[in-house]
Image (cartoon, rainbow, N blue to C red):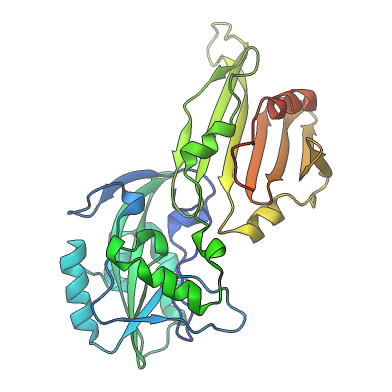
Length: 330
């Protein structure tokens, strides 16, 4: 997914907040289309750097620096023409983007209201998503203002020939080689930490792997606890266990917030004697609602175990004991 709770940011003294529809939710989305000419997996679709553009290595006070921002003194029209050819798709202005993706109109309108009059922005759609029946898109933006034309390409989307910009940026920011070499982990490797077998009596669902800046692996286990009695409106009743592991390398503040016991009923725990986290059992007048155990492994990986219709914390502890975190980097 694209993220799963992610902001599209442009620098040079201006921070544009265009929170696309799909980025408001914390679960998987479905890719429904992508631009022509896209080869390879959509998550890793490379974007070339406009010829002659300069890497921005200045740091804005109070803003977390991240690679890689670029600017150029060439005209907006020339930059747009280059990317229309390179990405094999037409650039859209804000009005056209809102027409094409009406579910994103509120976010687009909010962004436009915050832009100074002299600023122009154009969007390239890299791929489309459906989430809860609504349509969203992953975007690449090109911005023009009085200081030039600006764009951002994350290190994961740089062409192979352009990866030297990441090293140059890291050196300018004073990062060590060890720090700059850290990359989000392949979700397939993360998946090795999932339970080797389903809990007793449960049926394992499909394992989902999500790449990107916040790689995640997830799986669900379900158990039939009551069969339908054949009368109208009667359905089988299931309980389920949902497990996800997310690499929080690029979102440590989010991960640390997730493991804090702040809501009523939540309590702080130390899982397996070394992992900080929280747990809670939720009940209402009708009985059990579910339980949660959320913790952080190796100060980086967010593990979430959530149940529906199960309030037996001993079962969640058994699930944790069946998981192996030895292959996760420290």
